[in-house]
Length: 246
Figure 1 (cartoon, rainbow, N blue to C red):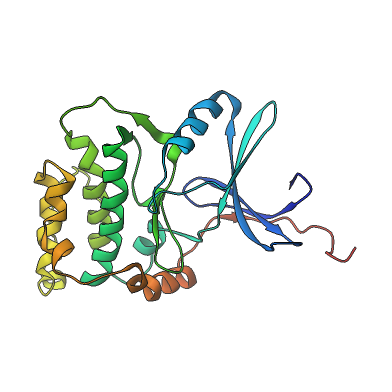
Figure 2: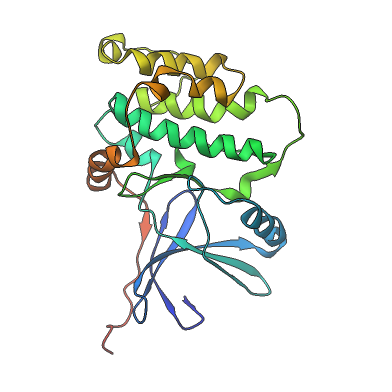
C-alpha cells in the first residue's frame, strides 16, 4: 500500500489491532502506524479523534479517506502491555507505578470528558521504548451518561493490574494476590490491586501509596520495555517487495 505516494507499507502486525507499519523514505523520514476503519465507522472515529487530546491516549497525525476506508496515520509504538505480560520479567513496584499512573491518567481523562472505553485490557494499551503508555482502540470509546462513576468504568484498571502482577486473569474475574511470596516486599502494589476492586473513583486510586509514595516516571519502564521487545513474540506478516533501488 502506498498512501498518497509518500508512505510505503513494510509489514503488517497486531498492535492494539491490525496495523500497517509504513516507512517514509524521503523528506521527514520515519516509521508510522497506519490503521484502517470501515467507512460506516468513519464519522464516529473522526469525532472521537477530534474530541480527545491527552498524552496517555494514542494520537493521530493525519487521516486519509477513500470511498470505502478511513485510514489514520499515527506514531509507531512497538509494544503493547500484552508483550510485558508475555515476557518472563515481572514488573517491580516502581515499574507498576509508572504504568498504572499513566493508565489512570488516561482513563480519568476519558471519564472527565464523558467518554467510556468499552473494551480495554493489556492488548489495547500501547507502550513505546521511552516508557510512555497510551490507551489505544479509540474507536471503542463511547459517550457515557453524566453522573456517578460505574464499576465498569474502573474495571480496566483492575484487569490490567491483575494481568501485570500475575500474568493472567482469574476465570471468575476475582481480584487478589495469589503469590504473596513474590509481592510481600511490594506492599503498595498489593494495596493498589485490592483498591481497584473497591474504589468508587479514579481519585481514590490516585490516593493509593503506589501513586503517592513510589517515585516514578515513564523512563522507569525503558529496561522492561526493551526486554519485552526482545523476548516477546508478535504476530506479523511480511511480503518481500522489489529492491529499493529497482
